[in-house]
Length: 151
Image (spheres, one colour):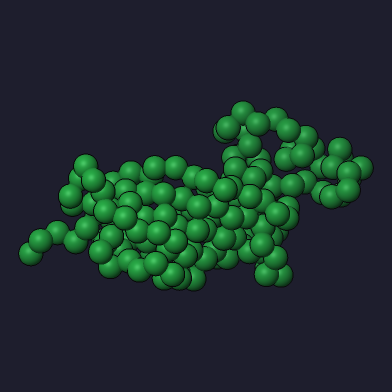
């Protein structure tokens, strides 16, 4: 188990995840087609040459998934019961093919579960930065997390 038990987390705790990921054209095309998103923004390089961006923008839902996915190994792997939802999802700058993303996570809130005494609810803030340290994505995520089992 690589994740952290609910009772081992602290508000303000930071995770600077070691995994970084360079986004490829294949990532973007596969994700966009698997999710049936035919937007020209993500798939049509010629169209995008005529826009303010001048190139394909990576599907933002891929960015969200990567941002949360990278965090799992350090935070919730083996200790999560359920993802309860995402809030405040933002993409303040575009992600382009070839960008390398790094992710950080902060524990924002902890509260005991009223219905499940062996769990608690944790709220994380996830932030994604590109290779130039530009914030390209952020969200808050709430999850139901296991407490350390009684020995």
